[in-house]
Structures are given as C-alpha cells and as structure tokens.
Image 1 (tube, rainbow, N blue to C red):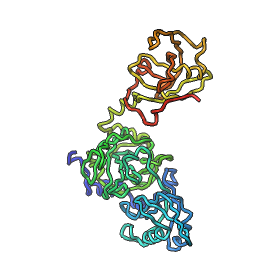
Image 2 (cartoon, rainbow, N blue to C red; image 1 turned 90 degrees about the vertical axis):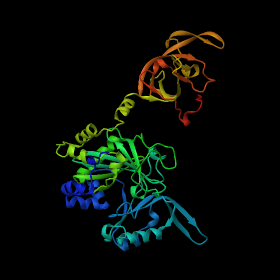
Image 3 (cartoon, rainbow, N blue to C red; image 1 turned 120 degrees about the vertical axis):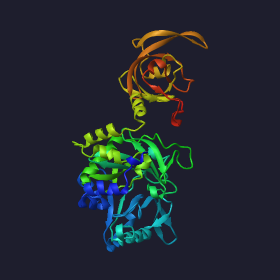
Image 4 (cartoon, rainbow, N blue to C red; image 1 turned 120 degrees about the horizontal axis):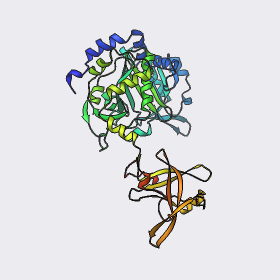
Length: 445
C-alpha cells in the first residue's frame, strides 16, 4: 500500500467529514435512537427497539421478565461498543422460597434483572456517552450469527463496515469477534478486520491489532476467500442508509440477520481508518476518483463502485460464478411420469461415460415403461454381458436443467441410486469434496 494513497485523520476530518456532513446529520449518526428513527421512516431494515429508558422511573417500572431470551442493552450515544450487553440465553433459577429469572450474556456471565437495572442507570448518568453527558438506554432485538460466519466468529455477531461517499460504496470490511475481544466486533478490543472485494463480496486480506494475519487466531483456517451472502442487497442497504441520514461521507455498519437479511445497526459520521489496512489499500485515491461524479440513484452508485474498485479476486470469482461447481455427491431432481420433480442424491463420477439410474427408482418414477425406453445398451458386468434399457429423462443439477439419456441398472447394493457421468458434466467444475450429511444410502420406503 502506497503512503500517498492513505487517507489520514486530518484529511478525513477537513476534506470529508467537515465538508460533506452537516451538523444535523452528525446528530443523527451520534444517536442510535435517532438513527433508528430515520431508518424506520425510510423503510431501511434495522433491529427492532424493544424498550427505551429516558429517566430512572422508566427503569423501575419496566417489566424485565417480559424480555425475550435474547436481546441487547445499549447506550444511545455510546462509543466503540462500550456499555453494550448482549444477552443470548434465559436461565431460570429456582430456590426453595424464590424463583429468579437470570440470563447468560455473550461473554458467559450470568446476570439478573437487578444487574440490568443498574447498568441502565449507569447509561442514563452518561457512563458510556460522548463527553459523559446524560444518555438514553434502550433494549434492542438480538441479531445472531449467520451460518456462513459461525466457524470464523467467536460467540458474538459479526458486522460489515462500508464507507459510502457520494452514493458510492468506496471500501468495505468484515469485522469478526474473537475470544480476545469478548465476542465483540470492535477492532481496538482484538476483533479481526477482513477487507472485502466490493465487486463480489469476497474477503481478501485480514488484520488484528492493525497487523496483517492469514489465519483465524489459534487455527489454520484461512480468512481470505469468504463469500458474504446477499452482497448486492448489503451494498444497496448501505447506500440507502447514507442517503437517508444526510451524511455525504459515512461509515455504515450492517449485520446479516440469519433469517431477515441485512440490517443497519449504526451510522458513523467519522468512521475509523483501519479499514485501509484491512484492504491493504488507501482510501484517498478512491475518494478522489468519485468526488465529482454525478450519481443518478442507488443502483448507479453500486455499478460505479464495482467497476472502479473490483479487487484481485474478481476474475477468479467471476469464472466460478459463471461456471457451476458440483461436489462428488450432489442433489439432483428428476421429473417423474406426471411431470413432478423428485429429489435424489447422486454420485458425480467423471470416470463414468454416461449417467445411470437404479431400476427400482426408475419404476417408482413411472419411467420404466415400453414407450419410455428409447434403446438398449450392452454392458459387461460380473454376471457377463447384459442388455440394459436406456431412458430419456429430464433432470436438474446445480440449478441447470437438462434433457439426457440414462442407463437403467440394478444399483440397490450401491450407496447412491443415481450416477451422473461425464457426458452430463460439460459446463460444470467438479470438486472432490463430499458434504458429511450426504454420506447416506438412499432407500425407497
């Protein structure tokens, strides 16, 4: 990374934050509750606010037992993740005379309603706010880890920081919680920062404590090459949030809800600069390239971003996206005699010339009828030479529909009732991997 391409603190503050972010927009970004109000008004997805506490009586009068099993307690004007308690599980502790509701936090600390009350009172007194000024506490919907991040993130919820300027995503970073960070996605506490190729949403480089790393700490699990789901929707959400906030230059923090998709959790009027280290590239030149561009709308801004800031993985990802990849065992769908799709596990075998189907499966599908048999093939087996029927079937593999010919054989002693040979594998990449949950023998009831 060239020093001349790096955006420094002074340049960020004078050239972008002060110039493009109005006082009103900064006020919105500095208050999480104001942020959610703006997001809600503009119909931009965000975690629901379950309760707000503006004064001490709000805390005392709240029914704490009404809370769900998982939630987050936050200060509205907190900095760097301070003052946030993430609750992941409800515990019920019963004594001889007393029954208490407890919870387990993401840091595996047991707390009860009294602990939460005291924490909210600290928030109201300004213990975690900017300048220690009185603040508002609130309880928010918990967003868990998406399955893609489970083996990379420690306990907490990863988030994605996207720098948006002039309606154009300029740089992005995935932040992964670690044991050191206590399950929080904060870089200064030891979380990991992974640069992201803006064109395809794939991680490139990784840092911890501003130093380059290759593997997840304590493992040999590589941190580059992680494909982030719903990447286009994440970029759209970020640009819409920047436009709604009024910030010209913004850091948009997004979490990926396992079921609901991308959600905005925070706006930053003065986002940190470690994102440059995570991407091993400076912000300065990127920002200069788009400073005076006329951007029509959200999709136009994203197209510009992908065209200008595609990373080194782009060509590789493009090739893989355009060419379906199949593993050694895959789901296939075959149309039965009534035109309905039936699902099976199939062995992908580049060593076999043609595809094959078990005789019992062919009968169940109603395909082994005289009018369905188009020819026969001579095959050598342990029993000698035999004639095998050949059927024409319609099947789908990795989303690709094809009409092909399959040989009927007795495969009841084999692990998989369907075999896909190399005549039907043109246009696919074949991986030798097998998913554990597909190592089963398929039987008809």
